Image (cartoon, rainbow, N blue to C red):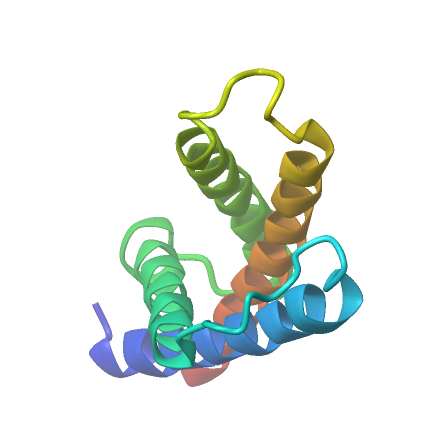
Length: 130
């Protein structure tokens, strides 16, 4: 595996994830996902970087994805499964009456879009570095 490619692509993907999270959750859908004022931005940033490195590793080491179209679709699919995984477990202690299915669906859709853009970015950067 090309470590330089992995690191640069992972950083680019993580940074894009962070900016998109701010755009989607902090601006566009802030009424659906209100802030409680206690966000730890460092942990949010580290989570975004972790996701960037995860996709970068999958794309470079296993899947050899280096064009933006394949990165877009692969990022969306991976994002869908991660969003569903998180949503199911995060809501597992709620009763069916307490669940907000619309909010779960919105969060999943946002994650799919963000992951697609991050995947596209990682593949594009990776393809340029080769």
